[in-house]
Image 1 (tube, rainbow, N blue to C red):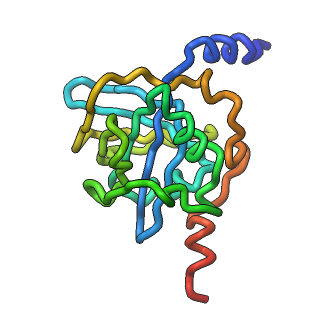
Image 2 (cartoon, rainbow, N blue to C red):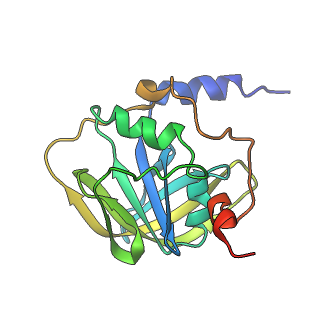
Image 3 (cartoon, one colour):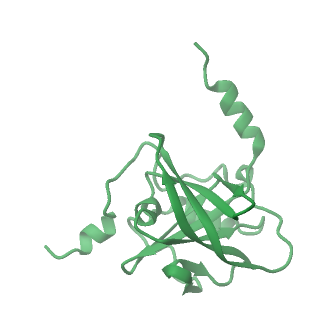
Length: 180
């Protein structure tokens, strides 16, 4: 039987760029660090992200119509650490950041020069630990040069949740604040 070790080795060599994906529903917002993402269609324009089922942001994205995608520059390690190691189940990752409500309510990190607001078009859950979210761009901002922050630069970070954790919607913070 074939092992996944060659697959893991090949994937490790690709060193993808990192993005922060944001979502908001019902006054609750979340964001997470994502390495699985790509343009997936030219006409019409489509961009796809894969969100971990363990993340607070995933559970919000299931109900959100729009997402924010923030393309990280090599100087954005602190932002990657914030959105990649903290869990939105316990903290507001947006505290002390300049944030505005973008199209469809998606949180936009306004100080970030390379970002897109996207509308969710489709979801694909084929049973793995991530869900594919197909989107279409509705607003794009870019200023200056982008030298992407790559997976190799954030590989030392410890995620707020392991891939094996899969809390059920609704989100934990929503559950704590819900009237009983």
